[in-house]
Length: 329
Length: 273
Image (cartoon, rainbow over all chains, first blue to last red):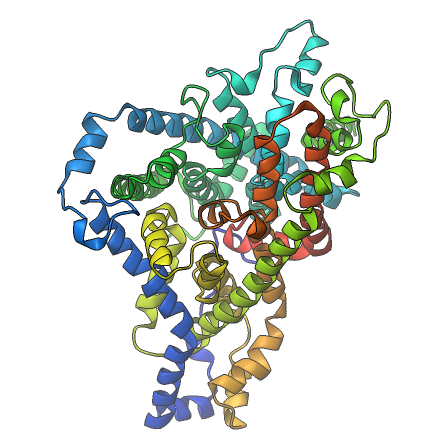
């Protein structure tokens, strides 16, 4: 497999490399037609999914967001209430405000720390020595397991009042709290669980580091640059597209976290709404209170927020993401 | 030399810290339930293997039922993803037809779309179809290639294969279907393996979908079953809960060890987790 790094662009097609015979054939009307039909046949499951599972539900969700729909109502008594759901959300729903704040704190603290950990470990692992593969595996494994219910259960036990974390702290004479049950710290335990899963961005950083030409470091050290300056002036610029890719991906992922908060708070975002992530609030409104119209409005606000965030990230990327070919993108 | 040693010690410490929660889970599953929180240290002072058989039968149904349910869903999801995503990927990577660029852009766009926007309407539609409390809502989307990450992964792979292969096949009289079946698919097996492994791990851990759609405990998957230990909280059950947690993670760890090569390539290519 042509191992492209995450940031590297889509593998190009080879239009110029077709053999003359094929080009001739391609020119003939019937062959082209046949390929055209075949294209749609190959795409048909995906097209069906795009319509049935994605596009139509999206439009339906937009419509429902202007109604008071609940799953018990028949289509006849769905009432169009205009912007009421949206107005309520922004003027008269403390839980909404709370969930936005919780989600922002979670993502803004967790993502940078996770990426910093991923980069630091990737730099340490970016040398060929015996056992490096083992370490890479060790650090990567949590990102496969971290989203599971099993790990959420482990977390709530580790950070319980008599859990292993407090046991460790007691060596230093510190008496810890019941972290998962304390409104001030419960979100912190979720953030730590998020950081613990830095393996996936780490592997992407490692792939990016492999692409940095060794000559650049040689030139820099000939010029007397210290390792610290080499890091800031060679590694970071060369790695910035990969960093950007990780940042976008992890931010979007961070905003969508659900399982661990749900399991640790037993489905209610507690204690005192301190772990009420936006997705959890959406779930509660839609599927435990069955305010599905309101939940749809929440979902559309979420979609717009993530869209805006992505645009913002991309527009700041212009200023700090360095592409080796000097092209402005 | 010394910096190397510092690097090594740092990595070992960090690695131990990373592994601690997993080791703690394993160790707790081997301690008598009452001592999980009272006996410090990873090494059990007294060993208790009964957590495993007891945990197996502690819930409403034997744990083997939940494992079997999860396996059925995982296997069918893998088949669905492999078939539907490879077909779409071949179309995008190798065939020319009107609208291909537009569709490709749409496909990339759906990768960024947060699934939550679709939750309510999908639930409504699946409810109207009478699919609540069945596996259809969990399986049908996979047969319709809704996970664009896998399509993208396969497109990337197929584009890297030389087009001369297609040309040669065409000259020998192969249509697009035979070219796909005889040439592209066999050469794309590494991408198929990556897709299968990622599907396995993500569907195995999947919590939200089953939580929404499955209410009958006979249909529960492993993650839903595990959460029941939390509901029926009793101090003596901690050991059993962690025993079954370990059982639930064992297949993922196994797949990870067997397929590390594909996983690493897969995330490096698409950023999949």
